[in-house]
Each structure stands twice: as structure tokens, then as C-alpha cells.
Image (cartoon, rainbow, N blue to C red; front, side, top):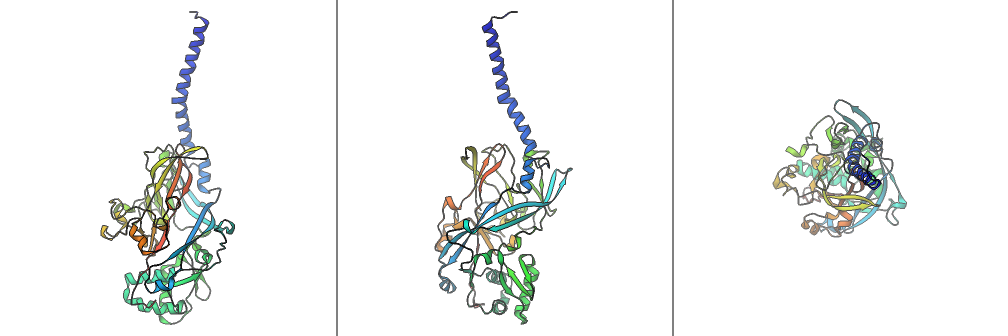
Amino acid sequence: MNLPKHMKIAAGCMGATIFGILFGWVLFPTILKGQLKKEMALSKKTDVRKMWETIPFPLDFKVYLFNYTNHEEVQKGAIPIVKEVGPFYFEEWKEKIELNDDEATDTVSYKKRDTFYFKKHLSGPGLTGEEEIILPHMFMLTLATIVSRDKPAMLNMLGKAFNGIFDNPETIFMKVKPLDLLFRGLNIDCAKTEFAPKAVCTAIKKEAADRLIFEPNNQYKFSIFGMRNGTIDKHVVTVLRGIKNVMDVGKVIAIDDKTEQDVWRDSCNKLVGTDGTVFPPFLTEFDRLESFAGDLCRSFKPWYQKKTSYQGIKTNRYIANIGDLANDPDLQCYCESPEKCPPKGLMDLTKCMGAPLYVSLPHYYDCDPELLKNVKGLSPDVNEHEIVIDFEPITGTPMVAKQRVQFSLKLIQTNKMEL
């Protein structure tokens, strides 16, 4: 049948339109999803795997310390007045090593190595890392807190040990250079032969061997990050590669071959979420992200906040916090019991880190307001202190990630120890 010319053109246009609709709305998304499923998995052949193994650029690692401006008064029981000093800026290079793929289980196991480099020119104005600031002596206070809680009868002996190890300190506070505290180390003199210092040093060496640097003549060095700088983390993490199911990519299924922790109570010991360096694609605002933070021995579930953009790329913003452990049934197993949970926004990390540390958002942002009554000089600010992650939803790639936390020690008072 011969159609008029204009009918042939119309039929051709309609066919092109139908093909365009099929390709644009049906075939192209299907092809794109299929290709993304291959590319976003942790197969040895993908670029994502290479970046996941070794992040090809440094992360910003900024540390702020609180200088105590009234430490002599605090020693007598006054409320601390603090002034934030920072940032002390470091480049953090992250890599995964000793990788072992298991085709049968679609998993890959690895260890981590983080390396830090101090960048004076990117730190706060005039900061060199060599200035002296005053803050509680973290090592002494940690020991005193643990002994006060577990073996209070030994506090008197601990005081005698401190006199030997730290050369008769007059106060529980220390004047310290930030680079010494963070990486180079503070000296612990364990060469003393008296009973109390020797007994305490023996216990320290046994309980904190992986957190101290041991030097000749029984001199120990303590720092916050020194032992993890450029060293291989001893823990083996096993995650799903996502080749069989891309929505499982990066999901942590074991640490040191254990499928659950033995730190907390009940469901809080479960390993939930990815390792925090890769996330599944095709995220929608209805999806709850989940990641496991090994340093804090717990999972986090950021929630969708709003649409955002990064350099013209459309993103979804997610935010997170520490939570209100006492009033959230899902989080109460991080406490010894619901009645012993810390105030909102705080989490006790003693069982996780072996030290009586509390984690919160900086300046007690999004915490129980009562906490701000116990210290002066803090200024909570949503723009400075919130945890924020902007994801490109199709690939699940984090475009912006601001992970901000504060670690605190609880100042204790006891009449069994003069300091």
C-alpha cells in the first residue's frame, strides 16, 4: 500500500518517538542500572575497587583541643572554662591491605592502614603544633577513673605510683604541645624500682601494650594517634563485594572472623551496614543508610534531610547523631541498663576503647542542655558541629562527608587521692 508522503513522515516520526520513549524511559535506565551494578561492585576489575582499596587523595583530618584557662580553680572543684584551639590540620591517607577475596561467599577481607601528615600552613592562624596548652592529663585521669570504678581501695597506691612515674605532679592537669599529645607521645617513666610505680607499670604494660610506644630503659610513650600512624590495624574486616547483589556492596559481615561483637548487650553487638567507605547505588530519600564505625564499636543510621547539590551534581543530604540512648529502645543495649544510660547525645565508650571516654558531637551540639552547665566556653553550632553526608543518589557516591565527633573524659573527685 502506497501512503502519501506526509503520512510516511508522520509514521516515521511516530516510530522514532515510540523508540525514544522506549529507549529513554525503559531501555536506557535498564542498561544504565545493569552497567552500574557491574561497576559499583568490588570486583577486582572495577575502578571503584581500586579507589576503595586506596583512596587516591588525602582526607582532611582536623583536630581541635580545649585549653583550660582556669585549671587551678578546676583542681579545687570549679566549673571548667575552656577555649577551643585549632584546627591542627593533618592529611590522612587511607588504604586497605592484605586483601583476600573469596569467590564462593562473594566477600573480601582486609586490614587498614592510616597515615597522617601534619600541614602547618593549613592549620589555624599561627598554630605550629609546638605551642603549649593546658588540659587534664589524659593518661593519669584514665587510670584514676578505672581504678576508682573497679578497685577504689588501690587509689592511695596509685597516687604513690603517679609520684614516681610522673615526678611528683602537683596537679591532674598537664601543659603539653599538641603534636606530642597527638602523635609524638608523652613520657611515662617506668624505670622506678619502688613497689607502687613498678606494680602500676607492670599492669600498664599488660593492659595497654597495643596503645603505647616502648623505648629503652623502661620509658613508655603515650599519644592519642601515634600508635595508628602508618601502622597496620590488627583487626581483619570482611565485607560483601556486591558482585552477586550490588545492594550488599561493602556490607560488613565479620570482624576477625566473628559475625557479632562481644562488647555490648543483645542486638547492639550486630554488625550492621557498610564499612563507611562505599555505599550501594540507586539511593532514594526513603532509604536508610547504614554504616559500621569500628572505632566506636557501633553502627550508625543517618537519615535523609533534604535535596542538595555539589558543583552542579544533584545530591541527597543525610545527617546523623549519637542518639538519645536512654529513650531510644534500639540504642539502650549500648548501656549496662536503661537506667545507667548517659545523657542525650553522649555514649560511653569504656567497653569499646578500654578507656573511660565519652563520644558526642562537638561542643555538645544536639546533647542534653544540662551538659553545657558543667563547662563554660562551648558554642554548639549546627553548621560547625553536625555530621553531614551528601550522596550522589544514582551511584551512591559520597560527594561531601563531614564526620565530626568530640571525645571527653569525666572529671572525678575523690578524697582517696590527693590529686
